[in-house]
Structure formats: C-alpha cells, structure tokens
Length: 249
Picture: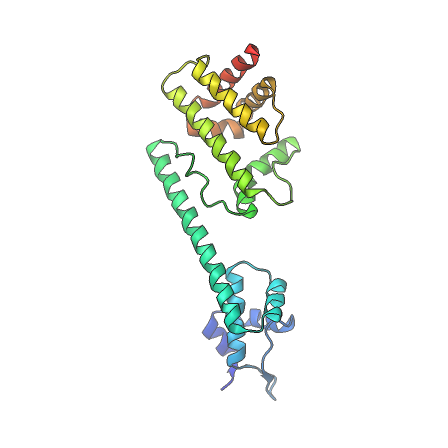
C-alpha cells in the first residue's frame, strides 16, 4: 500500500515541503504519481528516506548524501556504515559533554582543570575551529589577522600544543596563588620550558618576542579577560615574569 506525501510526513517527521524538495533535486523520488497528481511512496522509498535522515543526523550535505546513496545501493552496507559513524559521533559527543561537565564543576569551585582533561573531545579541525571562532573573530575585527585559516588543522599537533599551554598556564597560576615571586627561578624555568616547546614545534619566539606577546595579552581586553578568568592577576603576573626573563637574556 503506497503512502501519500502527507502520510510519509506524519510517519517520519519530515515536512511536506522538505519531501517536495527531495523530489525536486532527485534525492527521494516517489514510486509513482497518481492520476490526481499525488506523490506516492512505497516501502523502498521509506527505507531510502530513513537512510537520508541518518546521514542528515551526521550533518552531511544533501549533495554528498545523494552521492553516497547512489554509490552504495546495498541497504545493509549503508546501515552498517551509518551505525559506525553514529557510534563515533556519540562517543565524541559523550566525551565533550564529560569535558564540559568537568569544566563547569571546576569553574563553580574556582579551580583549574587538569591540563590532560581540558581538551578531550577535540578530534576534528571543525571542532577546533569552532572552539577558536570567537577569539579568531576578535583578532580579525580588531587587528586584521586570523588565528586559523580556512585550511585543515593538524588536530594532534593542536591538541599537543593546547595541552602544553594549559599546563604552563596552570603552573603559572599556581605560582601566583602560592605567592611565588615572578622573579623566582621556578617561575623563570617554566618560561624556559614553554619557549623551548614552542620553538621545537614550528615557532621562532625569542624571550623579547614572548614578553611582547604577554604584553599584548595584558593590553587586549579579550585576552586579558581569558587569563584573569583563570586566576585574578594572572595576566599581570605572566607579563612581569616574561619581561624579567627577557631582561636576563
């Protein structure tokens, strides 16, 4: 028994307008058109619609979905692939939710997160670009520079650098909390290690460059607030330590 477009809409939750659009672009064709001009759909079309909806849940564009369905006529193979993709997304989302929950608990307690936990769940360049979007927009609007370009991000490298930066900032914040002088050898050694890591990973930062960078963090409201939200006085403490380090070189 064929289904009308309204019945398919009621069954699937897809609007009639969307079903008409799918027909127009050739993504989901009715099995027949009645003499009265009504679109009619059979079980095969319902199965194809289910596959389309699974792919839409993965945020794939319609053109890509059409190519995938045309290239994989075997329904069992398509469903198996979709199951694997959805499980992968579920795992990533669960990890990100856990990271958010830890962040919320840490923020409520006034604590800083473990640097190994802070960036769990960032497994694609899209996630990194989304995480950096606000900062990138601020830099482009105010200084005409971009933090990330439109090309792909080296996710493992970004995760490694972010974890090291988080560890460095956490140790600096701990030094401030414990009232360790910014001139203390332990604080100065943190800067030595941080610069060594950066320069081993594609940067060419001198001590003076780093002092200038921390000065920018202090003068720019967006970046100053990022540091101050982690620990009050951290932006000033970091800059004072970096300037002292530069003077020693």
